[in-house]
Image 1 (cartoon, rainbow, N blue to C red):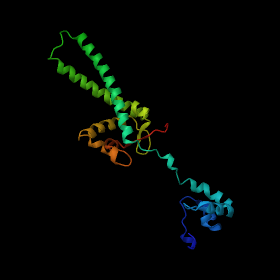
Image 2 (cartoon, rainbow, N blue to C red; image 1 turned 45 degrees about the vertical axis):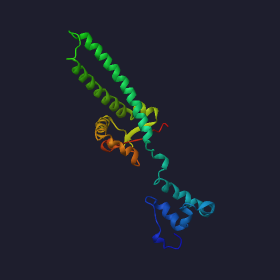
Image 3 (tube, rainbow, N blue to C red; image 1 turned 180 degrees about the horizontal axis):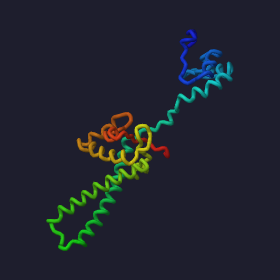
Length: 215
C-alpha cells in the first residue's frame, strides 16, 4: 500500500468510522500486518499509534472466523469402521427380533412348520429387518446426529450448513443410502475422492459427516 494514493487503499467491509479514521491518521502498515512482517512490523505497529489500532481491531475481528471453528470432515476409514460397528449392532438386534418372531410363530401356529410356510416366514423376517434398519438410522441420526458406531468414533451427521439433521432428512438419507448401494456401491466413492467426504446419500440429503465437537 505504500506509495499508492489514499483513495486506492482497501477498506474491509464493516470497519466503520474507527477504521477509516485510523486509516487516514495512521499508516496502513501499522494497522494491517501482512504475513511474514515479523517482529519489526509488530513493534512499529504498536509503537506508532496503539490507540488507533485498538479502536480498529474490534471492527476487523468480526469479519474473520478462526479455522478451528470449521469442523473437519470425517475420514473415509473412520466412517467405514463406524458403519461396520452399526451393522454389527443392527445384526444383533435383527437376530434377536427374528428369534422372538420365530418363537411366537411356532407357538400360535395350529400346524407344524413346513416348507410351505417357510417363504412367508422369511418374507416377514426380511420386512422386519428393513423396518428395524430404517428405524435404527432414522432415530439415531434424526435425534442426535450420531448412531452408536459414530458415537464411538467421534463422528456426527449434520446439515450442509452445520445445522441439526432432523427426522425427515434422516429418513431421506437412509433411502439415499440404498440408492448409493445399488450401482455396485459406486455412490460411496465420494466419501473417498471428494474433499468434503460426501457420498451420494449425503449430496441427495444435504448432509455431511464431520468430526464431533466432543473429540
